[in-house]
Length: 124
Image 1 (cartoon, rainbow, N blue to C red):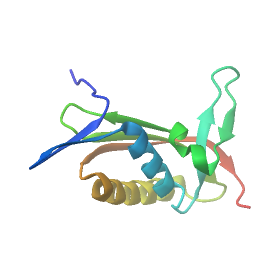
Image 2 (tube, helix red, strand yellow; image 1 turned 90 degrees about the vertical axis):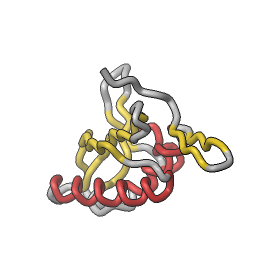
Image 3 (cartoon, rainbow, N blue to C red; image 1 turned 45 degrees about the vertical axis):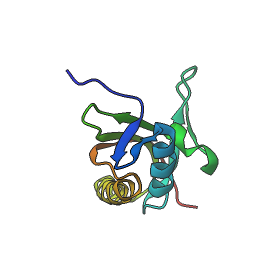
Image 4 (spheres, rainbow, N blue to C red; image 1 turned 60 degrees about the vertical axis):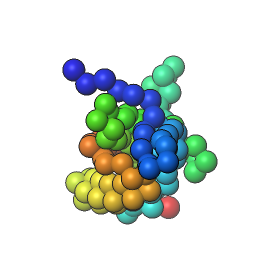
């Protein structure tokens, strides 16, 4: 049974560096919205089940971050994608970009990146 911890941890020679999951979510969200085919992050209203596009300053609400007990990151992205673009291509692009940039930013390994498509919109 895997147990999730709240924050990432890096042990340096002088002490520990703790990375809050909100920091990881914010950074991962900014990387994700730069990817081709991603219109933006999505939030689902628990009250009525509606999906809304999140503003750039609240991207972290469309991402769930879990740090596993082996100090690896698991990410769930709730996204709205562009109409007419292959979802498999979008997913591969997002996963490779996020994996590379988040690992370089945090110094931690990515274990899993899940893409949950919550809506489709025309490109403006």
